[in-house]
Image (cartoon, rainbow, N blue to C red; front, side, top):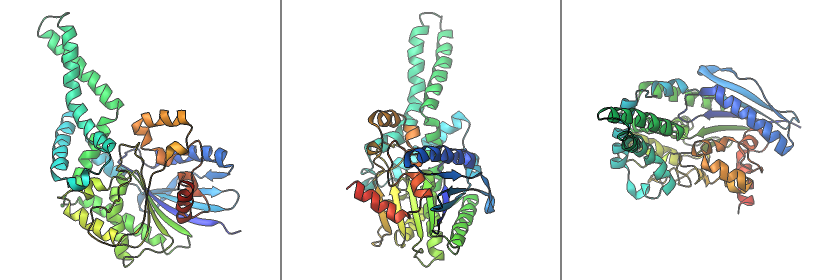
Amino acid sequence: MTAFKRKIFYLSGFDPRGARFYHQLYAEQAGLFNTMAKRDISVGPRGKAPGGNNSWVISDNDGQAETEIIFLGWDDIIRAHWVKNPLRLLGRSLKSYIAFSRQMDWRHGRKFPRGTLIAFYYPGVSSILLPILMTLLLWAVMAQLMDWPWSVLAALAAGIGTASFIIRKIQSFWLLRFIIFNDSLASNDPDPLIEKRLDEMAATINAALEEPYDEVMFATHSNGSILAVPIMQRLLALNDGKMPDKFALMTLGSCIPLIGCRQDSVRFHGQLEKVAAGEFLWLDLGSLTDGACIPLIDPCGSCETPERPTMHVLSPRWFRYSDPETYDARRKNKYETHFDYLRTFDRLSPLDYIAVTSGPRPLRESIAAFQAENA
């Protein structure tokens, strides 16, 4: 039997950890998947790929499938945009919050899940109000133990330190950097370094369309899904608006409407309109338990273009594929929940990430199996 051959181009979210972390995560989850599915897949070592990218091969030792994953690197760009100075971080995030709130087309924005809006605004609120609140609470105690102004200075130092620990624990600083970066992406004055990298990524994916693969998949996570829009616009331009049947786009934990619904993001919205008019298979998978994405909202919902890709906007329905106690424990950690799209659960789903990316079934069939199972 001839093995099903697949090539996947993976684009991560706004995460500076790079290919090493994602290769390790895949290998760990593949081990769990083998136990669950009674499969025998192996994950090869991480190696260098053209264009400064990384790659690894997933082999099905039963000979059913073979997959090569190309990790599209942009962690150097992420680190360049990673604001470190706390005061600068707060100042820039405040500016970005104002821009998003003023420029959001709330005809669409009001349809976002409530959890998404809370997750979007709480980093800013907590980063500003929490230090003030902690300082006041500690000062009420220290005023009984020290004279003024020492009680104020001690409360201020302890309040800021305690608030900083809490803010880091709930990943508010990461979310603030995410908001700042996406505010810059909404600009109509593009960053030449980012544009050059997007050109390279599109060219790399397009070259694979001529190679003898049964499936070529472009898989993105989180912020990578926003970057998928200009990349897909380039790919469609290179293929006369219609991607080959073997091509598929999979966006996991996507937040495309965050920029697509901004009234001032004219350039990005123009790219999204062209993507909305393209012909290709698109799976957009998002969970309501994940506050760091905009789930179950058509990514092209703000477009006027009547045509659409073959779009499937689905929830992973993790509650159906988890033990209840495991599910409750996992959903409480919102940061980790955002990475559950890349993990294997207690019960196998037709859209399990390892199954989709390593098995002999094309994405189109996996989607059909998931829809039949969750009708």
